[in-house]
Image (cartoon, rainbow, N blue to C red; front, side, top):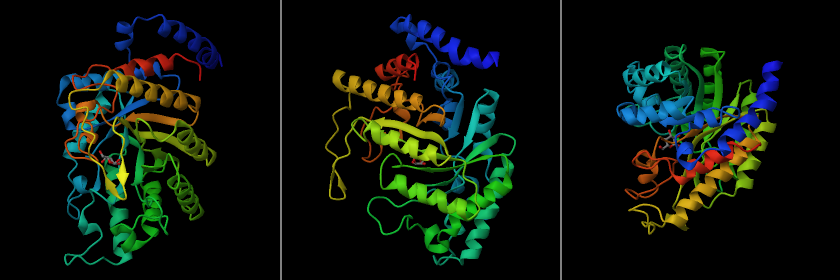
Length: 371
Ligand code: GLA
């Protein structure tokens, strides 16, 4: 009770007084994990590149309470051929994280990308019978969750199974869906609950910040639950842009998912400084204006965007399970190659030299406010 009182009333006052009294230089030394301790854990998506660079690994340990393994637990990396389990790289990352006292979030048991073809097709490229595919899913999930049962207690069970944009079906028409329909998603959640009854089970996707995917996700969760599956949380990937989507939209999604009784993981947060302009379905690629660095104005806009986002997350902190950045620093971001190959982006809080950006200070300052 006393602890509760200290945490709710005394700590915020002391923290605000402390954080606002710091100079800019002192703020740049602060830890994100500490700054947001009273709201939610901070995480980052990591890979061997981060572990092998001592300065980056130090940054991860300083700023995070948890990590997501970016690639090395995905199906094609842990079971490239039937029964051939290749856990070595994943083990190294999990072990290093655990030794550093970091919680590890499992990503991902099933995905239409980075999954080996043998799970869904025969050697002539024909879909396997649904029952065979579902058997592969069960074996795979038991194998991976069993292997990491001691160290990983939360998993993205399936990733990105929903359709984008206008679509007659809620579901992505992936090989998995072609081969086994909705049952492949259901089987994955049932198998995960059976493999590790205590683990938190998440659905993870991009575009959940807006419609139509917000409602599609809610329908998916409802259908899974109606069929007897347990879904504990939802990963809003939050691959955002500097100008969109609007903060109110993102808030709308957090509230809708929370109302459905889901924990919300902001699971792959980054903010591209490039607008993604489309003509029809074509992405325009003329925005190579930040090759040498950000302009002062864009640096400030990015800081403002991050401040707005963290204010929103703080406002909903009771429902936010964790906020995970994708990835550690600007040089490591996938956005330097997506949606346009080798176009420089600056989507994170740390630049290529691992220096905290204005966006970092903005976020630290926000942490001192009352939600
Ligand atoms: C998706 C996946 C991640 C990662 C990113 C690109 O969001 O969920 O695992 O592959 O794409 O880096």
